[in-house]
Amino acid sequence: GGLNYQGILGTLENSLVEGNSGWEGGGIDARYQSDFDISYTTFRNNSARDDGGDLRGGSKVLGSLFEDNSASGEGGAVRVGDLNFEVEDCTFQNNRAVEGGAMYGGWVRLTNSTFTRNYATGRGGAISNNYYLWMLNSSVLDNLAFSQGGGLYATGYTFDVRNTTLSGNEAWVEGGAVWRNGETALRNSIFYG
Image (spheres, rainbow, N blue to C red):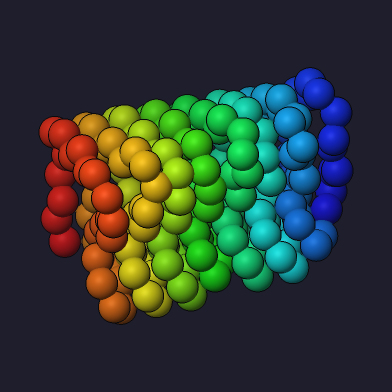
């Protein structure tokens, strides 16, 4: 991809990552216990022939835009590995993948973020999560999955969604807004359309 980072600490801020491609992490491949913080950066039109169109791994993303990215595997914009991954004040739009149109992965904490018009040819139009998903004050709008979970698809241990709007999401098989297998906590959230 555009940047392959395998160090311990890294920072990317006020940048543009655009038009890159790679086998994994078309924009950035930061993994193997990397602590990579990103702020106020745009990821646009990056692609991966396998997983993670833009960012693979990472620890915290703030105030950033992910649009028109793709992966032939998991996570059109982001594939989260075994690392804790926090997202705040970010927008994910028009990203695509086989699973997790915008994001796929493990331990994810989302705050004040928007997922719009992402799609997966498999499961999880916006997000496919297999471990821990916590979402607060966010919006999941007009996403599509050809299989299950038009907005969110989750099979992990924790699924906690609060003060979040899910609207206009579609799945061609099951779970237009959410497909969940396991304990579920939905609080003060809106589902419509």
